[in-house]
Image 1 (cartoon, one colour):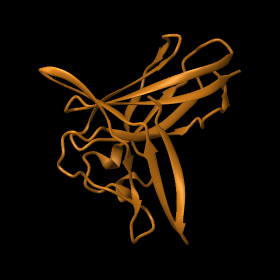
Image 2: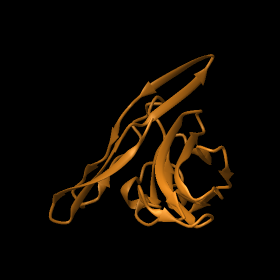
Image 3: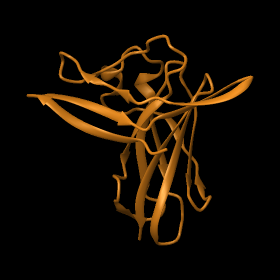
Image 4: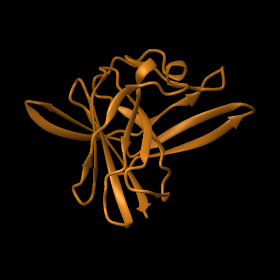
Length: 163
């Protein structure tokens, strides 16, 4: 499933981030998969506002800031984003459709996340980074898998062109 973030300007200095196509897989004796679109709405401070609702069925969520969809990048150039879940993020993995993977550096700072999502664990260090997998030149799809401490999973897919 493809997750896409869209920025929506809702007023002067006010922006909302919208995420569609979020998938969480729970494994608690039986395996179920549910699709749950998530949305953050603009709060009075002009930033997207959301917080944990205490509902364990909410999937982890995040944003891949760089590279942008369809961007042309060099192999091994760095990609950056952030991820949160109400139970915390246990792991983030990155792979290409060819099966090539890259290590992910977690617990990095990412501007604005702590202010936008104050009720979530580890908001001060929700950032992550990874080198783009070393694949042949051409069009490729990156799959970034966010894995929560409670076992929830969300995949973010990003199509890029490697030069």
